Length: 108
Image 1 (cartoon, rainbow, N blue to C red):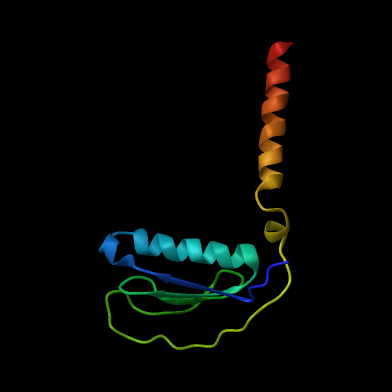
Image 2: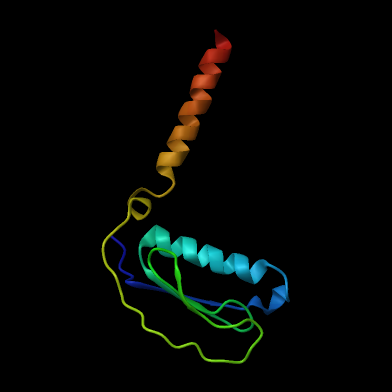
């Protein structure tokens, strides 16, 4: 069981300029929030500063390339999700099983 009840991500997105990378980092943060069923507080210097709910929805987001402060409420959560419990092993097992079945089928 994970000890963290809240996720925090501080990132220097200035490297990416006005590319899509800052948006992609925010999407990765949304994925992590869903994987762990935890809120994500994301702070960046120029990119996607946001508060992400445990289901991946963006609760609040600051505008890009604007000096501002984002305020909102965050709550810690407990418990585990299937991904936290087993990680990538179910998918890896299915892929290995599929390769094994294809290999056996090819030998026939």
